[in-house]
Image (tube, rainbow, N blue to C red; front, side, top):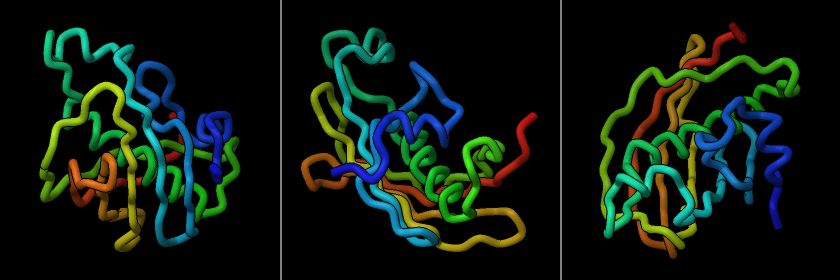
Length: 148
């Protein structure tokens, strides 16, 4: 059962196709953690060129999906209503590691945990899994800014 379906996710993220990388949120503990899902399909536009005959989801997009999940966690933790939301920008990525390729048909399970928030900078520990196996991990830093 999802905590947030796609319509609710779209209320909290400004991204749209082809850059909306969260399909639903399955767990959310305010101020602590989030678990979200990205269903990876062969219809993803990046598979046309990455790589023909051997499609693999780009690692930077796995990190982007983790960041989108973390952004939802921050917005919900701060209690922002969708109309009040600004934009979360990357401030840094540390320790990114890619363990296994993500392929069409995989269900990417995205887990982000708030490590700390200080002076408007959020730090998260993120990990992405497929079928319970770690495929990527990183520490992400982001900052929340008002809408332009």
